[in-house]
Length: 461
Image (tube, rainbow, N blue to C red; front, side):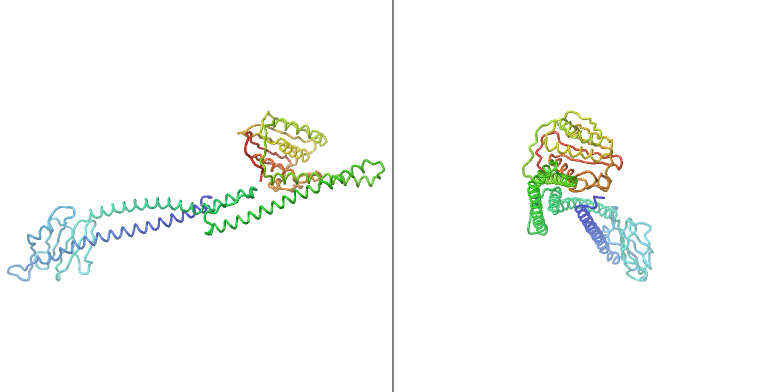
């Protein structure tokens, strides 16, 4: 589960387990200490009365070997009473009355044996005893039901206090963990923006002196070098494409002039035609590179205007009708009037690239279907062909530059591998999206979504 894969929740979970363990240990220790304190207090109270019982034994008149037990009037209040915590006594004499007990003493008190511990619990009774002589025993005890009730209530108070501390601790721990991981979230957000193409993004370091601050400094330095490297690469691409325009124009001019001559042999004409085709392909490639360079690193925002998207679709169909007729492809459409804020020239290029691909990569006598409708504030354009389709292994890469799925496409089609990359860059710059679904031998569907409302969208980075 993603919940347990999060570092934040892992830290929170471990912190909660440790806090719960500490609170449980503290609660159990406190409870045992309180229990021991109450038992010790009760034992001390009972043991203070044992000497009184021992001193209350007197020799019997006329028979000094026998002993009688008689509690003095001043000591009687210490053992009389019917309250829950009243103290009782039981006396066993070897010579004399075998058992003497107070009025409040239970009738089932067993006589202790020599070697027994001097304190014992019997249910809710606590008793302590003493052997003043061979065969003699004195015992005092009292009910500890009220003590047990107080101890039980104390346990509930400890549980409630521990629960409150646990809740406060988890809340405070969540705040501390969230604050500690905030720089990591900033790093992640910046990395996502950079991965999307915004190489100007930098991370703000709250404390440059700590470990995360040092990491942020290293990452910002790395991002800056990447931005510089990509900028240099783009400028090189644009400069190289621009410089190639002039020699390509010269080559095209000379090949056209040479092909217009009637003095060429068949072999020479074939060579000039091959040169002319290669020069035209290089010109299309340089124009595509210049377009991508402008889309990638243009610092000026788009200037969209309201335009009839349905009109652009119809113009694209009319423009590509000769190509479709040449390939024996039928173009059908279902479009509704749609006004969209966009740059018409760029959207026209998107439509031309997608529809021309649907024609060129279709099967003979195939069909291209174009739909245009509105959905949730977006204009949706779908271009559907019934050609060979795209293999699943190629689908994730078709928008990459210079990528050509030759295994699923007609290799005779003269394409540079930049058309779909340009399409995606333009759609991203308009704040839209493009998706593709395809099934081998059944065809492909490209879906373009463009926002209908005016937006402050910058160029795709």
